[in-house]
Length: 586
Image (cartoon, rainbow, N blue to C red):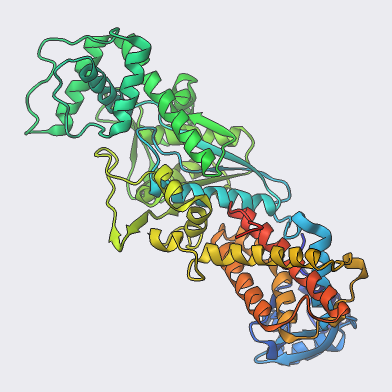
């Protein structure tokens, strides 16, 4: 795992010191099995690194933590990069590192280039990240955009952290919502053929429904212009959803099952293709588009339920089959097969989970909208019922994004088609601004998306501020070329000429990038990358405003050019993780 070289070496020194203390009997046997924790200090007065090893061992050793810390320091081997070691507070051991070690990170950045920041906490494990997975009932909206940005950024982050990531979109191509969608398109199709239609208010609205209906008319002409007597039943005022179900049944009777499937398949193909194109333009591509219907067609749902039944986790009641979810922490048992013989969405979720395990994934990461929070406990229960390792299973919830334009919130409703689409968002603010803004907040936090701010070209706009830092470095190198200033290879640069405290701080910021990646990947938190980029950009802009770069003496100039080149590389690497470009001109 790539991390700070000094940090790794300090960990090894402490481990060696514990081995010596254990051998001398100053600490009990087994002490060396304790994992060594070394963290960067928050205040420079406390050094560069600190470890709590003495505090963690004190009780086991039967000693005062500060006394034990002194013993550790006494047998600690010398390190050429450490200037001083001291005891602080209740027993922390603080390390003060030579500045040359920090400046060496500049060479590390430039030598590793695009690979700087890559770590290996994943050990090459194959994992699946399933995200977006919106029903293909309409265009993706800005809420889906947040899930797409989070899922893709997390996937990129986990790849940098050493995992093999398989991106998957699970789409519903069966069930009632698909029937409503097919009905909506078919009624609009009839309308375009001149048939008098009473379009239900709770069907899917919007121009996209009319567009698909037009495609249906072009491909099939009058083939589906069929209707039974009394098609538009009464009872809307009493129960709109029951009315819709009756219309769906009337459509099936009118068209016949085969023709109804033709309509549905065209609608699905059109919608899925639109979603794929939409996400691709947003910088998001999937390795697999998984059909929910394939689970039933392949018998996967029946097999999964049979396994649960064999293990005593299924029982029959009131003509339905129930999963004993309450035995595994859920608040109640859950139906998997209804009394009409049709499976529930939950049954499909179970089969899909088993399918992923069977495909060899070491970890299953689900990214769901916050409105699915009620499903989490039951899916966890099913995972336990199959006897899988709970560490393999992760559900991350993403809050919806509230969109504001001109200070006013934009409301959204999928069926009424009152929403801002992801395509409209891309066209209005651009992919970079959209993805950066989506990545600024932790996934569980509610976010307000300010369109006006996202479009502004000012330091108040965080994506502009970070991208401008990269473009500004590129501009400096163009100026150097115009002035015919030779830029030396890093091996020829003496970094000791970086004497200003502000440039040393900038080098420290570069040094922590791999460590930040490790923590962000461990916590499934790509927003930490965004925080880091904003801090690095701020440090660079401050540095640029305070020092002379091209007008310094040659050796200082070469060192400073190496430093800002490293800044440019890390900005580029970090922006790539969140799917944002690093422009050379702005």
